[in-house]
Length: 563
Image (cartoon, rainbow, N blue to C red):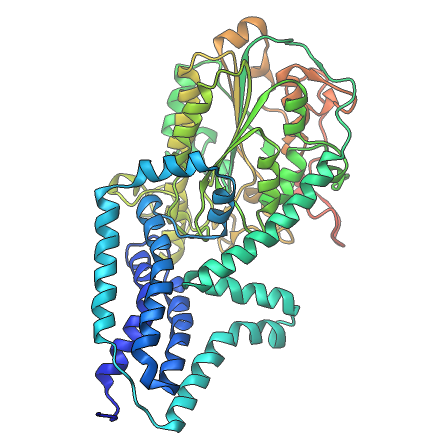
């Protein structure tokens, strides 16, 4: 038997052991669905399987066979899932799978078992079998096998070492970071996803169990009684009002909602609404509860807006295109689980992937047709979240802003590209939100639909035009200014005549959303404060505090920020 080293054997061994994870990641990277980080990580953690064959070359074929059956078989889950949904398998999928019953699983298989899916899986399997036939023992010197193996293991564990030794994080957090790096690689992908899922599920269950002990809203009354109605709350993401044409931005980023406003005179765009926090979780802990900047922890001791609507007799729905189960998003999932029905449209591994908000249209249509007489629907969009170019389709018609037209200050080419991609994302968000308004209108409802963004975003528009994103310790107005739009149906207006158009220039903070929503819905309870409702005649102009209420720096008056 030839025991000489063969580069050909080594290359085929590497290709085989990397194939079941790297093939999908290579396609994802080259297709622009996500970046190359997943491919890098999948190569690193697939190479671990090469180590046993270096030390025991005589068992290479047997090891490769077992590896192919187990790891290759498990990888079919990821390949099939991506083929169907164009999303990577993640712990979010475990969450959705755990929430599915036998009938739903059977319907899923019946719905998605197609010639395309079978063809993709068959080709994928045949390539794997071809590589298996090419796998042969790799004979190297003892010193070489030890050096190579140590390099592979050290490089694989490097994120753990950096987290503990350099960044000084706890071993638990470092381990979680390591598992997140392994998410792209089979079978570590399934193992880390399951561990993360169980951990987040445990945290969420603790929160939900705590919320079950909270008192109800005291002395709740509903001015509308049992009249059938549908109320819709649309929550956007990272969309600053100052980059929307409907609010005076130089570029035409919102032509569709502007046309909707012309066609529907009762449509209202409130002109001076801000978020109290520039982060999704923190603002929704206030906007969807009785908490605010001066009482930030009330969300832990008082019931939420979803609880309010359920107590008032509404059937509640939560449709989201945000990630379902990550450590950061457990609170979002907690809010969603308070609703009677949930629709999780985004089960991707990370936000840096193409998952468009148009995915919420179908579940929204279905929910509008639900026979419940009183419906409360929350739709949570991904909006204009970074990376901006991933928030809209790749077609030429969606690349509306490509040059410096409408930009009245200097930006280098890299910044201009990001600036334009954000405006393109705002334009696609205009399509999504307008379509939601239209779908609601076309359902001939008795009710209203309200849209606001959780917070804004700074994308090089504030001088000296060098800030991107959000930083609570270095705030700009663009991080906090948000759209706030309301449309009331003709049926609703017949029984709820009002002059809200005279209120559109009021200064308002979304930390007080629950009071405005209660006012619009005709709900009253002991903690309801009409002076905090933007549509109430008793509205009192508040100091619009921003900042971290738990931070040492204290709070800042938004209206004192430089314009």
